[in-house]
Length: 362
Image 1 (cartoon, rainbow, N blue to C red):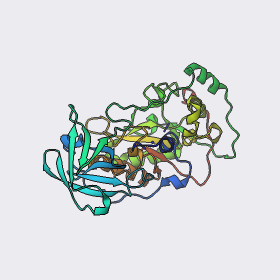
Image 2: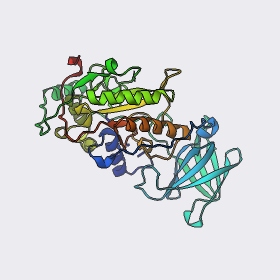
Image 3: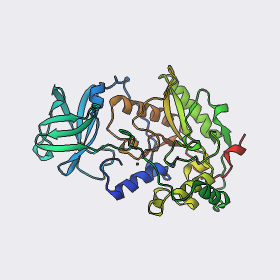
Image 4: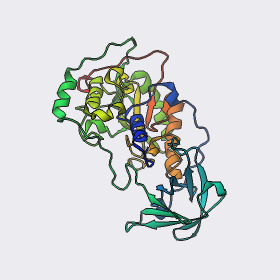
């Protein structure tokens, strides 16, 4: 997955965030294998008029995040730039006084937040400014919000890049174990697919692979069946965004990046977890309707919402993210801290990068 923080990012922080989206975690330090056991009941949907207020606001030399929990709005005040998911931010309840005006609860004087929060909206009803006492915080739309789209500016004509990637040689490898790839459509029942990198609907605007197929190592595919069954009990199914990706396609992605953004991805000779056939990017769909579930953010979008511990969004969005994570962890996968949609099937032995074209797999 090509495979990001939308929170008023300075350039270096944006690069770091984009790197975590475009590059799936390669070490256990970025993965977590702790199963969430207490999810609680499914939260109610957030009221639409208040959902339009959720998001990031910046002003007074600081950043605040408006989120929803159990039908109430809250304000997260971020004081550390490194707090990309707001999990270490001070969080204050907002109690509604009248339309778009709230009192801020439990605010110590040192927090410098204010006692009253009043929102301003645009003509479409979106929150565009937040007044905390006498301080104005302006809305900072993140990628994926309000038609703000993340796209990589491809450095050369795409056919030229494809030609160079096609003749590139797979790096020498020390790993000896090799995945046994299986077609997920033949192995795991009721999967849905939205294979973005076989289309132009991705951050490059060009397909990285020529066919829309999803393959995974046999062991990982067997584990995916368990996750699918666990989700079925909650009324959900798995939506696959990306599985095995040939090394050549990863090489193509690295070539497409401008020089100043090369560090967004690992070097081609280092490889990519999806090249091994034991990594997968997934979301949820609703079994009753067959429609994709609206998750906390979209796939491969550089935003704070990509992080698995992100406290923003609605209670339902966070719950659905955690339902997915719980099912995948219980099935034996490890979860990325940097991308809620990315999961690896672990092994004590390292697996080789593969370069078998998808169209040649049966």
